[in-house]
Image 1 (cartoon, one colour):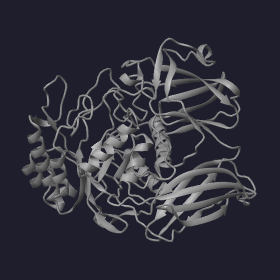
Image 2: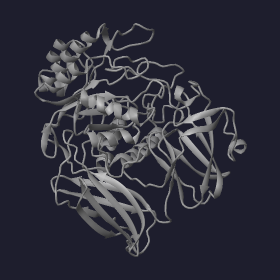
Image 3: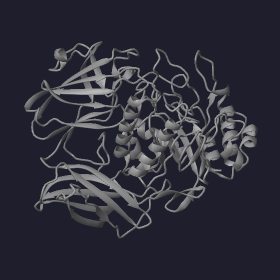
Image 4: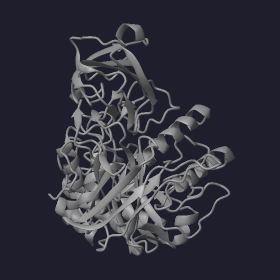
Length: 580
C-alpha cells in the first residue's frame, strides 16, 4: 500500500504529523470511585489493578470489562521525560476529563468524541513524571451519547456504554513556537488549495513555507507571513497560503489522488518547526437533484458503519483492524460509508482518503432538549468539524439523526430552529460540503433529502417510493414525513440513507434482532440484499443509498459481517449487486 509521505505507523493525527512524539497507550494504574476523591489520587497512585489504554472500561480489551462501572475512573502513568515544551493529547475520553501532572492541575475537557490537548510544559521536568487522569461519566441523556445506552441493560439499538479513555493518548514534543493547526480548503475547479497555518502564538518575524509534492515531484510552493498586527477594531485577518499545483490531479473514490504537504514554520528566516500533511483537489456540491464531485454527478453506494468491535467496543483493536474495514467496504463494491453515531479513530478517515471512500461524518446524538444538551451538543459538534475538516474523503456532515434529541421537531418551533441552526452553523464553518440537518425524516433546511425505510419486501418498497411525489411528500410505508411542518422539498438530491437491515438467523438467541423476520442462510441474505438494493436502484430520482449495515453490533445482528469480522455473505455477490 502506498502511504502519503508523512505517514507514521500508529500515529494518531495523520493530517498534522510531527516526528517527535510518545505513545502512551498501554498499561496504566487504574481505580474506580463513587466520589471525586481528588485529594487522594491527583498526586498519583499505584494500583494492583491495571487498565489497557485506549480501551473503555466496559470492553474486554481494557482488561477490566466492567459493564456497570463507577462514575469516576482514575488512571495513572509514570513517564520519563527530558522536560521542555510538551503537549498531552487525548483522541477521545468520555465524558469529563481532568488531568494532573506531578500533582499540579493541568486542565479539564468536556465531551467524548473529539481530540483535546493540554499544554503541560510548565508541570513536567527532567526525569520521572506522574500523570493522573480522572474521567467522570454518567447516564445523562443531555450529553451527546450516540448509541450508548442510558439504562442498566441494552435495549433496541442502544448498546453497552463507553466510559473513560477510549482513544489513543500521546505526548508531543514541540519547539517554543510551533504549528498549532492547519486548515486546508481545496478547489478542484480552480486547481488550488488554500491553507491556513495557525502558530501557537502571534509573533513578529513568523512565516510559513509550504511545499506540495505529487508522486515525489515538487509541484507548488509558497511562503506567507503569519504575524498580523491588530487593527483599530481589534480584529485580525487570517493569513492564507495559496498553493496552485502545476499538475492538477483530482481526488475521487475511484482515483484518490493526494498531494504531500510540508509546512515549515520560520522565525526571522530560520526554520523552527516542521510538520507533514497532505491534501486533495476535490470539490463536492449538490447541483439540482444530483450529488456532484468535481462537477460530475455521482451515485452513492454506501454502507452504514457503527464502528463496533467484539472486544474493543467503540475502539478498534489496532490500526490493521481499521484498514481491514476500509478494504472490505471497497471490495464489496461500495464507494462510501456513513459513520453512524460516532467519530472514528482518525486513521479511519486517513485510510478512506488514501484508498478512496466517500464518508458521511455524523454527530453522536443527545436525547434531551434543554440548555445543557444544546450547549454540550454545540461544543462537541464544533470540535468535530474542526478536527476532521481537512479529510477529502468526508463529503457530507450530519448534525442530527432521526429527530433524536429533537423528538417534537415535526411541530415544535424551538426544535426546528435548533436543527436549522445546526445546519446553518455547519455551513458557516464549512461552505465546501453538503449538510443534512436531520437524517431520515422531518427535515428542516437541508442540502440532501434523506429517507430511512426498513421495508423488507422489495416489491412493496418499489411500489411505495416509485414516484418522486411519494418520496418528497411521504410514502404510506414511512410513519414520519420527510419534512417538518412549515418546510418543503426544494429540488435537493434524494438518498435512501438507511434501509435493509436484514438479519441472518435473527432471533435465534435471546434479544438478538434485525428488521423483519430475517433469513436463515447466507444465500438468502444475498438474495434479500439484491432484492432491496434493486428496489432502491429502480428509483430514477434517487442519488444513492446506504445499506444497513457493515457489521453486527451486540444485540443487533443485521450486518454483512459479525462483530468479530467473520464474513456472513459471498462478498463477490454483494459487489456484483452494487456494481450493476
